[in-house]
Length: 227
Image (cartoon, rainbow, N blue to C red; front, side, top):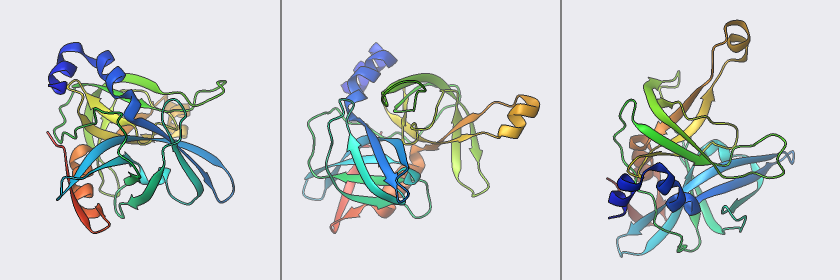
């Protein structure tokens, strides 16, 4: 029923419904340099039907930190118990202590269509503003690519910036079809030839494979809501 509502009322409605489960990840490294990223929440069910709230983010958002905190859009800290990192992909999972009643939660959809309309939501840094605010950017899926490390990615036209790492890429059904991971940008080519940046995302197909491989928390196997 929720996905039907999402399709009927469109992207502005989707942003309003899911904004509460898109969280800000703040960390400091060992040199005390601060950084910001984004995570989004799904619900996992173990074999006993017990629910666990899991934040999906990029591994580079949670590596080599001296302190790491997670906040909702109202800057209320959300406590977590564990961080699980994918050893091969730029993905990590924040296991929260409690199942928050913020829902509805995201559904992962492995199918991605070229030129399909999408929206991203995250916490990019904005110059001359005093805080990190939740921003939504609309765009479309442009292409499927593979980088030199053989990672499967797709490109979107939705504008991103530092802090958007870990942002969900959401289709017009309200399903997550991928996670923003990096800006493909070469400063010299931009200066010399005006070559613009491209914005890359890891598809949900890879997220699902990663979850099935790495997420076994406290000896419990989990199932996830997929479409």
